[in-house]
Length: 204
Image 1 (cartoon, rainbow, N blue to C red):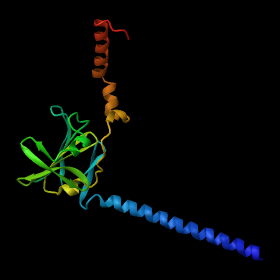
Image 2: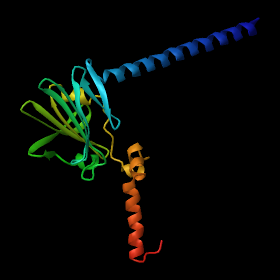
Image 3: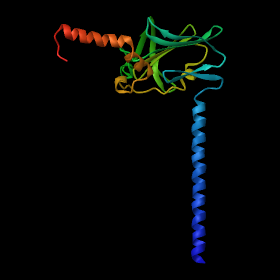
Image 4: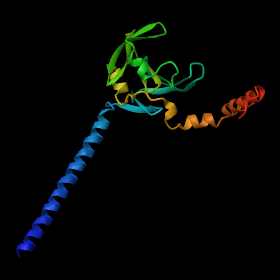
């Protein structure tokens, strides 16, 4: 009888421990989910550009987006009346990356001087002029430029994790990189290198 009682007690203990672990695991999942939602302020929607999540007030309309061929920037522009959120992103910046930017105390953009600060855990460069807030920062070797009139910069960038610099060449290529390497432009440059080699009598 004592052995049977011990077996029943052991079974009860295992069930109790399993139940406690399940409750704890569920609580962690719920807290994680809530904290992720907290990053998006109430009344905002998140728009993604190259994996970065920018929060924009739901009442703002996306008026323009695309690729600026002249300045080599992806951009998204949102507007409501005279207020706006303009986002530009320079991919794989040749001039700046997070390591370089971390060494600066200020940054000049056109004729505007921006001062080093941290907003929502992101280290960048900020200034406010004529009610327009400018915030510039690097994540890895992408440069992000924000011009905002209306919402706070804190709310716009609160869903972004700033990444430390790693040369993108060592990462897996993304879709756009693959498209470039499969493009005629790349094929032409590759062909040209063979032509040059032939001209200079290089041996391949």
